[in-house]
Structures are given as C-alpha cells and as structure tokens.
Amino acid sequence: MLSGLPEDIAVLTLPTPFPVGDVNCYLIKGDVPTLVDTGPATAEARQALEEGLRREGLGLSDLRQVVLTHAHVDHYGQAAMLQDAGATLLAHPHATDPVAEPESYRQWRREFYERFYREAGLGREATVLAGRYDLMTRRWARPARVDRQVDDGQEIVAGNSTWQVLYLPGHSVTQIGLYRERDRVLVAGDHLLAHISSNAFIEPVPGSPDRPRSLLTYRLSLMRLLGLDVDVVLPGHGRRVVDHVELVKRRLSFHEERAELIRRQIQSHASTAAELVHAVFPHLKPDAVALAISEIVGHLDLLVERGLVAATPTGDTVTYHATRDERGGMPGHTHHDEAAF
Ligand SMILES: [Zn+2]
Image 1 (cartoon, rainbow, N blue to C red):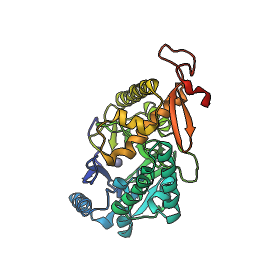
Image 2: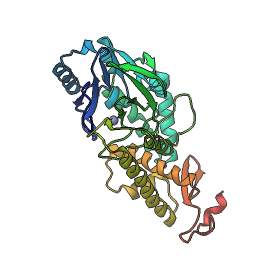
Image 3: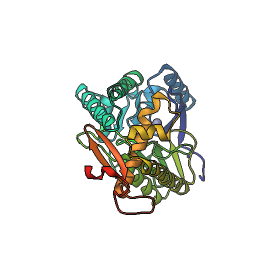
C-alpha cells in the first residue's frame, strides 16, 4: 500500500450542512467492525451512512464500536443513534462532557465563550456568539454517553488489528488520532487536512478555568507528526495525505506568515482581536466570526510567546500592541501607552 486505502478500511463520505462540506467517516472492517466518526445528526447524513454500510454488507446494528476523533458536531452528531443500535462509544476523556452536554457543562461553556469574546473586543455581540455554539450542537447532534475513554499511548482493537491512540490537541482539545504501525496508517480527524489549514479552535478544557493557547498546542501536535513514520493520513475532510512531512512544514510556515501579517497590523496601531479580524478578513461572513477570532487570538498567542507583542487588559477587553518598532528597537518606544504596563 503506497497511497491508497488499506484493504480493510472503507471511507464513507457523508454530507454536512457546514461550509467545510462532506465529512469522511472510516469503516474499519473485520471482527470488530468499527466506525471512526459519524457525521452530523441529519436525515441526509444518516441515509448516506446506511448506504455506505450497505455497500460493505453491513447494517447499523453490525457496528461494534464507534470512535470519535473529536467532539465537533460534524464528527459525532450521529453517535447516540449508533449507540442505540448497539455500538460502544470511544473518545478522549475531554470529549465526555462536550458529547454528553449536561446542562452544567453547557452553562460553563457559555460563560467561557462569553468571557473570551468580550476579551476579544466583541462587546455585546459576545453573548449572542456564545449562545450560538449551544444552538449548533442542539441542532446537529444528539447528546451521547462516552462508554470508554481513550488517551495517548493506549491501544484499541478495531477491525482485526491493534491501533495506537495519539492525543493530538489543537484543532480541538478533544482531538485524537488512530495509528497502525503495521502499515503506517494514521486516521487523523481534523488534525491535518490536505486542502485547508485546520483552525486551532479555542475551546474550554473541561475542568480548567484557563483559556488554552490552542495554536501553540496545535503546532506542537503538528510537529509530533514529523517524527512519526506515516505512509498515509486519512483525514476528516477532503483527500488523503501521502506526504505528511511536507504538508506539516507548509502549515507551520503558513502560521509564521500570518503571524507576521498580524504583527505588522499591530505595529501600525494597537488593536483588539476583533479589530484584527476585520483587518485580516475584511469579507468575513457573520457565521465565520467565531473561527476567525480563534485564528487571530491563536496567532496573537504565538506573537506574545515570542515577546513581539504584549497584551494589556482594559476592563473586560484585551488590547495588543507591538513591543518593538520596525527597526527592532527597544520595547514600547513607539507607543505612548506603554505606561499601562
Ligand atoms: Zn470537522
């Protein structure tokens, strides 16, 4: 197997109502028929799933296991339905609450996002945007119970073989991959996509009050792939990846370029994340604001980490400014507000 799909794996491509388009679910065939990811809870996705399984001679109730690569609705929406049909549900421990969505978790997540969006400078819009996540999960997923939590380094049996679980946080704090050493296959969810740079989506880490620095975490998880012997990456969307090292390097340098663009923007005037969103993505659609905020704040975290930008809280908002001028001068010299910190 050089670049094709291993013989014991079938890809079931299901429609989603999201801009990302179809989602790839993988059927690992054998004694323990396993589905990796489920598609959203829509009639269209269910029909496509049933048809895909039928082509492989299976029905919904033949699935013994469902593994979730991460807790985003396009990947877990139909999990509860498949559990009802008899499958055991496996996911990372951090996926437990997002997938089950107890009211206490919803409330905590809403508060996290409201605080985060206010910090980003969205003002009253923050409340609306924070509530939107709830509406989305209610509409496209049915809550499900994770039966078995799996974490980095653990092994699971799927089909007829053993797979190693890799914890790859960044795109989501719940993101895992499944790696099979025998033929160097990595089922990667949205960790690495061929056609787009994955968003390092800022989401709360269950049990932690701190906002994660998702892009920094994501870059570490990407670098981890550089040291992994992989022939083919089976991604959550789009085509298979056969040269993962080259693609990872491209993604890492894309982050550098975008960070530099943002740094220059801040150099000309101190800005909130929301102001930078408008500067970097002038034609942004309203439903993409949450992703764009994650994108900008992630790159700001990178600049702050490198000491090129500083973050100053003002009330419940955070303003970012450059710490040195274009000539690489001393911190603060080009800004009269340096006294603020
Ligand atoms: Zn996805």
